[in-house]
Length: 372
Image (cartoon, rainbow, N blue to C red; front, side, top):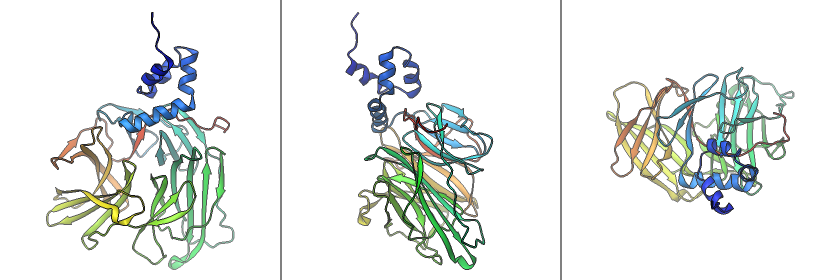
């Protein structure tokens, strides 16, 4: 019987799911070695990203577990339980198949849901001994991958404020998965006002909405380059601020994506802008503009999540905000870029309240030398 060449075997294996690959490690020592090889792990991840396959939606259900939704069908769902489930968990970020999580006890850990491997990060204290704190500090997180050093990094920024927004203390640290330790980095030149915010990754930089002064009501976009570990402001497009009641920044297809939502008479208008050339204000292009009739008092928030596999549609999460703080329920819709029509998406077992992240199944390992 003819046997497949090693190159052809790798070509076939790279298109399989992580679940199948973990099973096929038992076929032979060669297959096990090949699937565990760092080159193959990157090859498999790159193939998934380029072909838009092996993606899932991760819905946090305001408790101790998550609902995983297969992105290809949006009908296949599975409840997955993360480690350290004795406390409610929030997602700090998702990158290349790894989730950064934090629980109510401020324990931070990384988790690969596909391989079921996890790693608790070393604790790092915040020194407020020389400051007088009048309220809970603002803590911002972000998680991403830096390709040059082949390292996963978690950023944490903490600020405390006194009465009348008086500035007291600021601290920024970076955790490196490769070294399994935290480092203090240069202090930030902006202000954090919300209790807790989670950044997003685009163009090898983490991004947050911040304020340039404690008194400012206008939010600005700041990026943290994971390679140089420098902060820089990124200019936003000019849009109609007088009609605006919500806007948000995310990443979609690897690019910065701004969604502006406002009312016009009896309709809700959703505009989506994409930055085609990172850091260049003039490259912001309005790629989507659609109206959604509403006769309800809640504030709808439309968040684009990802393109369909053929690139002809965009999946939106339509949620509702109460007092701009609490998400209450939500739904998913496809927006057809050609016909400009909206199609509701029914997902089985979807919770009434949830946070959602896009996640790609991968074999990306954690630090084998770190405590689990």
